[in-house]
Amino acid sequence: MAILEELNLGHRRIAHADLALRMISLAWYPLDYFKLSFGKRDGFVIHAKMISANVIIDKRVNAPSIYHQIISHSDEKTKQVLLKGLLELTRWVPYRFIRPFFSAQLMGLGDGHVNARIKKLAAERPGFAPYQFDKKHIVVDEAWAEYLQRHQYMLIGFTQWHLLRFLQRNNSNVIGLSEKLSAPGIRKLANAKVFWSSFLKGRLIKCIYCGDLLQESRISLDHFIPWSYIAHDRIWNIIPTTSKINSAKGNALPELKDYFEPYSNIQFSAFDYQRSQNNPELLEDYHQLLQTEALMEVDYAFFKEKLFLEVSTHHRIASAMGFSKNFRVA
Image 1 (cartoon, rainbow, N blue to C red):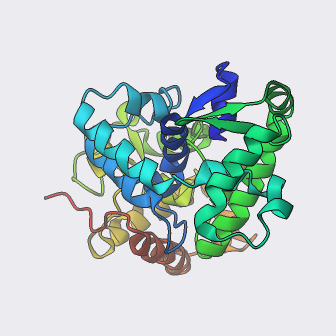
Image 2: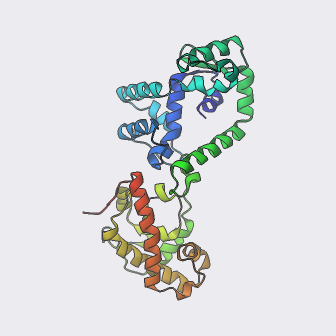
Image 3: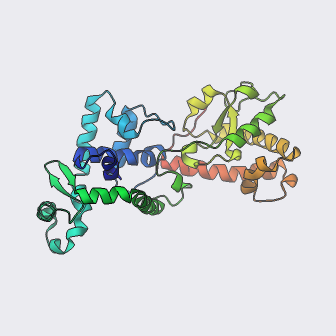
């Protein structure tokens, strides 16, 4: 993926440092934003956390890539420390990536001699492997560069499919993995906005977190279990709050003992209103949650039980993954 990004910029001579930075940039969302595991032996997670600790990442849909945000960061010391660690971590990767092209020649060779042998073989047979080596760079063969760019979408899909299978092995309890391979797209909140705006109209409803009265025209929609874990916009996980509270909560998990009861109450009240208005499109998400077609027969006890089973399970897994927990308003 890093090679393809560089080729699309017209670069066939690519520094190992740029490859390393692009690799960690591509891994940042899965590793740090979505808190996925790449396995116990993974070394990238340390560097992903270092980026988060030192760079204020812009996660908006149209924000610059993570790579460009790191490159443009003003703290040169942070960049140098990050790059030093990444180069150490990835020092064998450019060689081992093309090892299969020379498997016959490398058979029986000691591991400590493999890199030098690959470098020599690539230089002796230009164009046989995708690239050869020049100091601290790889140089992609011209014909290979054209081939890789022409088929890049197939190659990206192939790579992401294998990455998804890898992540499934290391994150077996996590939902929405296919949505967590890269930066999130535009949220689909149109139904949620209609759902809550119509319910709040003419009612005195307080924010479950801070107790402020909510104004239908000025609400901010909060994912009770953070979107960065749950990766969907189903209405049963969305509640109205203020912009200030939503910003403060961020990707934190709410304290269930403080907030589940009011969350369940406001959810059921809005659900009850929408079913009385016979709005099937706005109730679709509740069929999945409650696992019943007889929504008109659902009482609060049944609703609360189903909601707690769903939310508490996600809360427990997200907490184990490293999401900040126990959010509460002082």
